[in-house]
Image 1 (cartoon, rainbow, N blue to C red):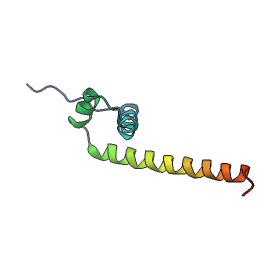
Image 2 (cartoon, rainbow, N blue to C red; image 1 turned 90 degrees about the horizontal axis):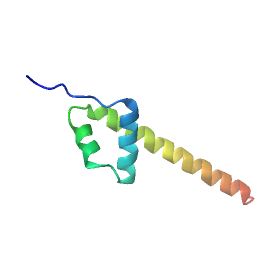
Image 3 (cartoon, rainbow, N blue to C red; image 1 turned 180 degrees about the horizontal axis):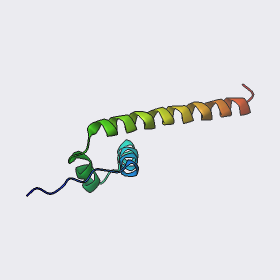
Length: 70
């Protein structure tokens, strides 16, 4: 009899991608992520997180340049 593999929820996936991005993911969560989860979910979440990070950086730079009179 096999034990069912629990899939990560969307929130768990986003938290794992964020923690991995900062390099602070726990080994327990990493093992959970690599056991039976679809890697496409993590790739998509990583790409979305990266795009969001880039957009936030662009917004910050524009705000700073506008405040500096440029």
